Amino acid sequence: MERRDDRGAVVVEFALVLPLLLMITIGIIAFGYLFHVQSVLDNAARDGVRVATLTDDDDAAASARAAARASAATTVQLEDDEITVDLSACATPASPSNDRLAHVSIELEDFSLLGLGTITLTGAGSMRCNG
Image 1: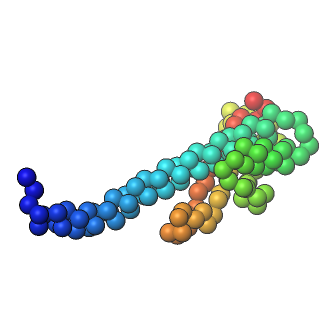
Image 2 (image 1 turned 60 degrees about the vertical axis):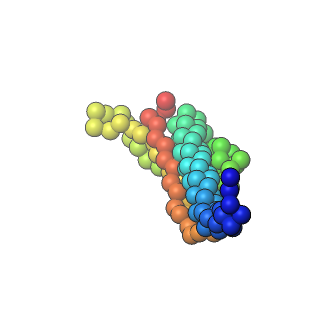
Image 3 (image 1 turned 45 degrees about the vertical axis):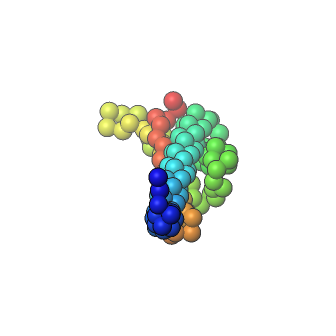
């Protein structure tokens, strides 16, 4: 049986522990969201490089940017200046010293996480030219 004067101690202990539990819970949720956005950026870069290497369009870089923006649109709104497309290796002939890889990278600067500061996230994708 609990004594009457012990009930106040339980309330005080709960008041001391509650902020710590809330901070841990919010941190777990924030980290999960950050991990999700990083995964979306990596997937968008892979989608962009796939479109760039498999298309015969004259402006494959613009097609790659559009594909990357569309892939990430449900989570992050990307701008063209955040997406870098490097297709220079595709213009050179194949040789044993040149693996002819196209690269797409996405750099999302100033990503704010619950107003606690900003983080730079980067997604990257590479694929052999023309498949």
